[in-house]
Amino acid sequence: MSATTDWSLAPASEIAGAVSAGTVAAREVVAAALERIARLDPAVNSVTDRLVERATARAASLDAARARGDALGPLAGVPFAVKNLFDVAGLPTRAGSRINRERAAATRDAALIERLEAAGAVLVGTLGMGEYAYDFTGENIHDGNTRNPHARGHMSGGSSGGSGAAVAAGLVPIALASDTNGSIRVPAAFCGCFGLKPTYGRLSRAGSFPFVGSLDHLGPMARSSRDLALAYDAMQGPDPEDPALAPHPAEPAAPDLDRGVADLRIAVAGEYFARGGDPEAFAAVAHVARALGAHRSVAIPEAARARAAAYLITAAEGAALHLDRLRSRAGDFDPAVRDRLIAGAMLPAPFVEQAQRFRRWYRDAVLALFREVDVILVPSTPVRAPRAGQTTFVLDGVELPVRPNIGVFTQPISFIGLPVAAVPVWLDGGLPLGVQVIAAPWNEALCLRVARHLEREGAVRAPVATLDETR
Image (cartoon, rainbow, N blue to C red; front, side):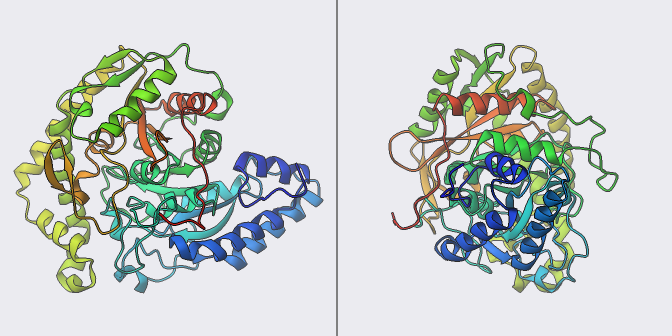
């Protein structure tokens, strides 16, 4: 590569190849990332902790290992950052809250951080999020709102807004995030980057602050499908410290990433997923379907009821987790989060029990669709990123509150733990939109193959935001 390469903007795959080959030192790549964060993050407000000393020492150790002739990992020298609900040794795990800042510092990194660093990656910072992950907007009254890098007057999405914004702003090529009801897929759509919500139970959650145990997923965000696959592959594997982790073998996605889609049966979901959003949201799905040559259509049964059931379970489990904090420190919560948790605490138990029974039926009904198709396409969000502070929008002629309705298309999917690759679509020079590429459980590789094909065809892309312009 050229001696003038801006390593702070290079893809993870190129960084790792160059560091392993000795074309560039890991310390040079990491220094470029830290400099870009210091210079540009004030415009975005995505980073909550910069780990300068740790990252610099880690990069030096990689350079020393290469000088000794040691083999470096598939992510050698790649800077990454994590949503601040991941444990980072030496820091209290905030989870976007005021209360958690008083926790003792973590003594060990989260499992997925350990795995990325074992593959050669370098942790450079932690990232902002909605309080306790109960958010779709990217707004936080304690740390300040994370701004959309492509239009700073607009939402970044949540609750992983810091992760989406940091990737889209070119601060890091890879970020880790969480997704309970859409918290990877929403920021991926609003900020115009790629995201992967793996199958429930695929990646270890050990060392992360929970929100809803039966719905929480952890996964990567990136500016390319290849980088997404490299990060995902590095994080797979068993972990006895996460009891929800399934005993499923690791299945690397990167080796088959360029196989194409000729052998895949791809369908667009209609009915529920073809209404209740702006026309642009459905145009994005049609755009992706054309690029894939997809002409099939399927109906996902009872998706509206699935979304309602997901709301009940989220509210009830979230409230149970925070009940002691609500009793003793209600005034230290974001009022918007506190009030929804209190409402969840008052839900009648039979409502939640019925939602769980329905969940089992719904999972079986949706899995039956995958006997006929391999991949299903649906919108990620009903709209482009709303303006910061916007409280209502109009969908199908009805004025609705923004916060609870951003996840109208993501909740029915994570409700049953299906794997999803979120791909960014740019249609008309405006803000990006997102499309969910959904497969049956344990088929993340299919989702990523589709994302890669779309990327190669030029149908989806994740450009770095230009931060010297404001819209």
